[in-house]
Length: 78
Image 1 (spheres, rainbow, N blue to C red):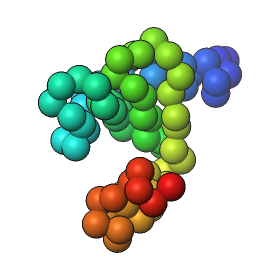
Image 2 (spheres, helix red, strand yellow):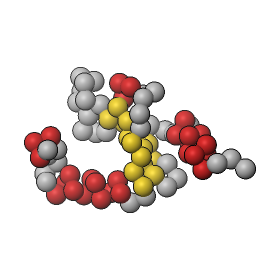
Image 3 (cartoon, rainbow, N blue to C red):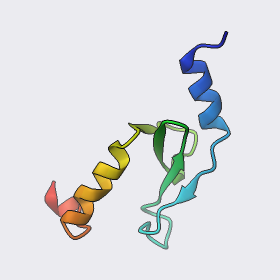
Image 4 (cartoon, helix red, strand yellow):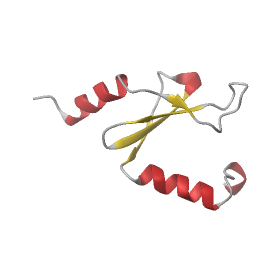
């Protein structure tokens, strides 16, 4: 029986990634997102083979809600 970690790696490998509608058009600040079975995965499109952030179910919506509550501002809030 495959481990959960192995199953998640397989799911990530076959995931359908799409660019955020807020990514810059010049390819300098592109974020890609993939919806998995019980997670949302986020990565830098320039480094597709690099690290991936995985948000548990519901956490991605909470994150987006926080961004929207602040008018879409991000960097200036840090």
